[in-house]
Image 1: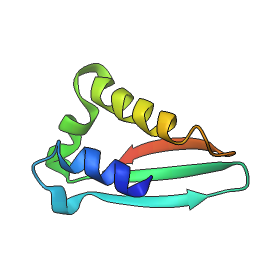
Image 2: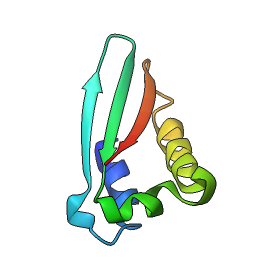
Image 3: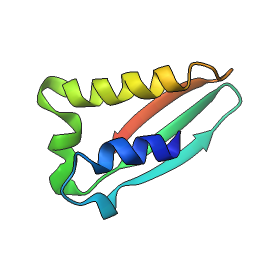
Length: 76
């Protein structure tokens, strides 16, 4: 899942080397924290959050087979 997020986001940004995904696993959920370069934040979020919503939709669909709930957070 981590590589899926990195692959999707690195194609969108100008600084693909700055894309970092960290994983926080808890008892009932898995949280993926995506951090990108400051200049690329607008590209990852998109107009009215449409790109971020699309990325989350793909991640949630890919992780639907797991027993835990999956969350994607975007940070600088």
